[in-house]
Length: 307
Image (cartoon, rainbow, N blue to C red; front, side, top):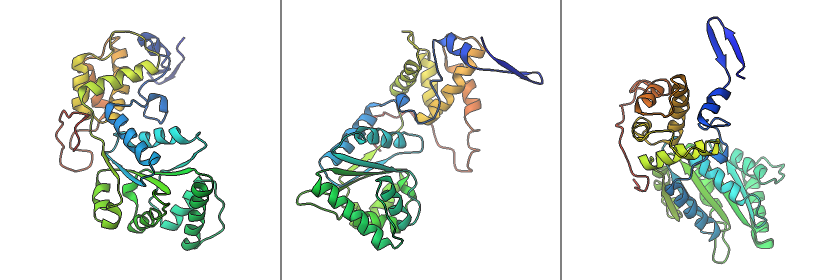
């Protein structure tokens, strides 16, 4: 039974009837951080494999690049979950590295459950160095630091990273750092030759192609409970979804969320291109009006093609 509340002439209800109509038990297209719904495309799997190689071989430094909404933060979480329960690894994720180096060091120490009473950056750096050497040399553990939104770091923090990467054993780096950031991060790293030449793995995430968009949609629907063999999104609906979203997973989910509502309002058994366009009119800002920037072309790009 759908619960309804009224405000004037508008009725608001829960989604249970819509979920039943499409064979779901929860919303498949929320844009939250639930790892169950993160679709690993072929390129995401490749990025994970490359990052794992950096970490497990103790190479020291890797970079993952991509536009907003492509899945960089989700990749960081996947890597974190991969290692967090392993006794031979200590792993931490920093989501906001935009502060001063001293503040970043305090955050890192706190994330690794290391007490500190110092305020001076040299003392904080020494405390972290002692932790790294103790964990790696005395206990044989691998220390992993994942930094999201790395393009927001200032030049002093980049210099801090360079110094942290100097922690070395006989034939290995003692601290494994993976940076996740927007494409501008590449320019910032390359502009610092003494940091750039330490990068052992450059990884570039690009927009999904139509095949991967279809797989993302059906994967999320499956996780949310749909067991129908017939795809909910028609072929032309998938192509239109890819065109309007430019292959960006977060945008795909925003449009798909509205498409489910629009389709149910029509009691449509499948979601075609017309319904996707109707949904996009709600989910997306007017073209060219969001930031005053020149309007970008919408192109179909292979998920396996690197920029």
